[in-house]
Image (cartoon, rainbow, N blue to C red; front, side, top):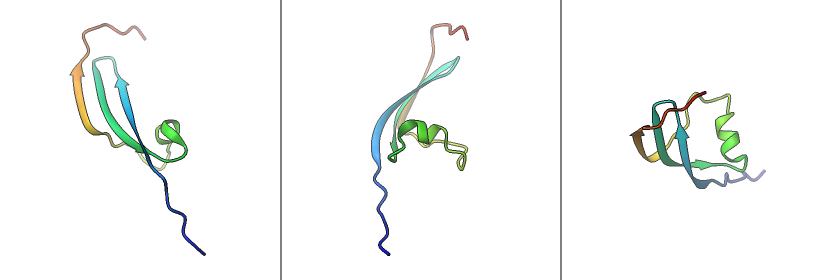
Length: 61
């Protein structure tokens, strides 16, 4: 049996929290960013070339 190669795409990611904005890039498979976020086998998502900035606007959840 031949082994299938996993195709990864590099995409930009912006994460907003109540206090910070985190920008970076990540690699996702064919399930896309939603597959990476909903992956129950991992507790984190790796961001490369990440920058973090304190949020100056108030977010009302």
